[in-house]
Amino acid sequence: MALEAGLLLPEMLSQALERQKQWGSRLGEVLVSTGALRLADLARLYGAQRGVPVVDLASEPRDEALAAPDDLDFYLRTSCLPWRRRAGETIYVAGDPDTARRVIADHDGRPRPVFIASRRDISETLRRDFGPALTDRAIFDLQRRMPENSAATRLTSPQMFWFGGFLLFLLLGLVLAPWHILATLNILVGCTFLGVAVLRYLSIFVGLLSPQTEEERAFANYGVPPDNELPVYTVMVPLFREVRVLPLLARALDDLDYPASKLDIKLIFEEDDRETLEAAKALGLPDHFEFIVVPASLPQTKPKACNFALPFARGDYLVIYDAEDCPEPKQLKKAVAAFALGDEKLACVQAHLNYYNWNENWLTRQFAIEYAAFFDLLLPTMARLGLPIPLGGTSTHFRTDVLRKAGAWDPNNVTEDADLGIRLALQGYRCGIIRSTTQEEANCRLPNWIRQRSRWIKGWLQTWLVRMRHPVRLYRELGPKGFVGFQIVIGGFTLSSLVHPVFYLSIGLSLAFTGVPADFNEGASLAIFNMLVLISGYAVAITAGLAAVSARGMAPLFNQAPMMPAYWLLISIAAYKAVWQLLTRPFHWEKTEHGISRMLPGWLSRETENPDERAPH
Image (cartoon, rainbow, N blue to C red; front, top):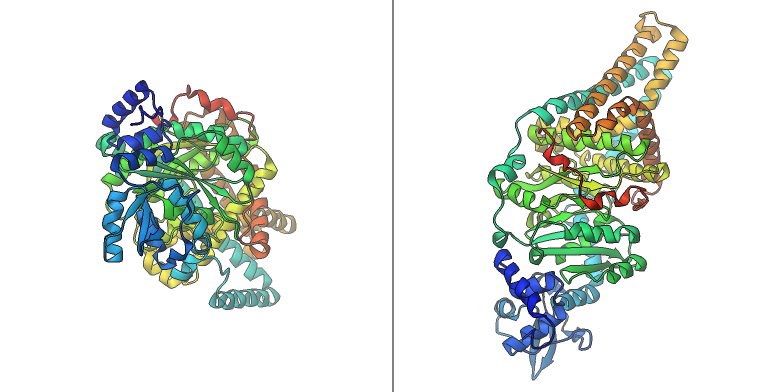
């Protein structure tokens, strides 16, 4: 029928039939996902084949009086809508009328006539007609369902009471016994530094040298099902002012080694960003790319946009990518293998992240060392030790049903996946690590880097405050090991960023006023303690950085690792900005500009060796 209508050439149909055999999808899905047909054409062909009327919802909109807001979940789940009434009978439209007839009959208690409309028309109609309800869910659903997990409230009343009491005690102590109070605080902070250093030290051995977890062995040992048995996979990409990188994003998604007919790709746009939306339309992408426009509302954050799009996800699994990401082509298959081997408690797997422009300037080199140590060493170590994992914000692969059950993302938390990783752990789930790298664009300009880093730290502060609303309950639910791990990673890393410069100041003042005698009461011993803490922290961090970049084959970064202390001071500047914004603009999402690197086109040739094949995990 498509050939007779002039929609296809014979060679296009032959290619589609070969892909259908390999992928195991229906022919129409193959034709749409390869760009041979549009969804509207497929709907017309399907209607002619089945003898069912076809409705163009743009020219024949539905009767809004038939709207049933309470049935929104049913419409979303089944991709159907009540269209119009004729002869006293409600007529539905659906993309797949055969399936829809059964579920509509069960839902309404009687059979209903079902006409055909394209899946895209139905989704767009749902977003237009139920936009306010979907927006309300995206913003408030977590707050209503699980208020204790929402960062919408910065501090609860009990927290304000305890923080106020602590500050009062601290001020009183500084008046009555200033030296003892400062020394005690200094030692406590120093012990936090040492806890971070110990975890980093463990990561060098556990992350690189210990046996792999089941998730990391999955692709090599278990493999993945053949293409015709792979599930539908949703890929969500939130976009905001990303015109520069759109062509690169389209190329990266096209390069994914996964049946296109089983990819459900959602490009998510903000309503006030028409420029990016129009640029995406100009790319002429196949119709398995769905454009979702999020209505303007506050907070304007990435997690709110993802929440708005989540009800339209059709995949068994779901991954989040950022606009500038270049995932390894086999990453989705590796995630499927990991989920297939894991149990039902494996809710998410995190891929490794690193940068394709790591050697652009001093800032990108330091950023690459930090990322290598965090994603290649620290997170795998936390997974193997059974600690809750702060997810990375991109290349996070979820079981879609578990993600929905867990409350999805907190729209008020500006580092949403770090928060979600902890929440999944509290609900009894675990997150794994897969040995697959997504290459990103490292910030190569300092103001842009400060904006990004201050947002990350603000989100970690939000996460810590939310989880510490009930510290005793947190201890019971995570257990001693998980509780300590949470405090070291979420609390310790953030605290280290804030007080790192204070250690320099403390050492300088102590030695300036007391010299070097070992009289603790005069401060010299405290200065020596601080120097030992800093030296040990630096030594471990530099060693971990060297181990991580060595595993990635980034030899030019070896001589950059000793300069990490200067980079840490920049992190401290971002941390102070994060605290200020937490007080003044807690839900403001500072935009990171992408597509500004001079090395941006370098990865397109894909002629460099894959670092994952070198890493001796």
